[in-house]
Amino acid sequence: MAGHKRELEIPPGALESEDAAEVFRAWIVDKGLDVSFRTAFDSPSTWGILLVDIARHVAHGFARDGVCSEEQALEQIKAMFDAEWDRPTDLGTTDTRQ
Image 1 (cartoon, rainbow, N blue to C red):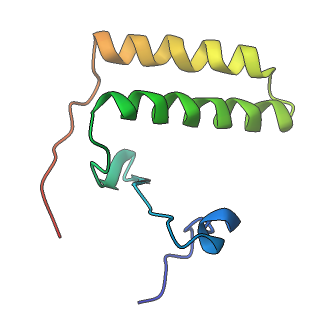
Image 2: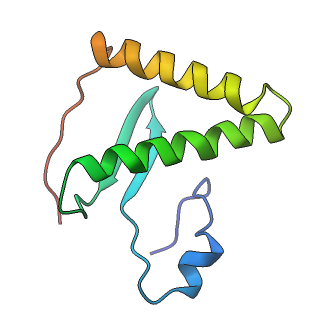
């Protein structure tokens, strides 16, 4: 099956590694979030590390693009994370598919 025209490329390290495994994919669909994921880890707390690592990569991208510093981006990401955690705008639905 061919990929979607707006699908991101697989990172080079993942292509080169026999042990690589995709654990999360996110799309914006009709102004909402659509995801697929594997629980993948022995503990839910490992997802906390993963989410922070993703935030750091995103902050680096905003700094690279000249939008703001990494520190400013991380502050904004964390502020919105905390706000969304406290008052969710969308609880979403999760179903199991194979």
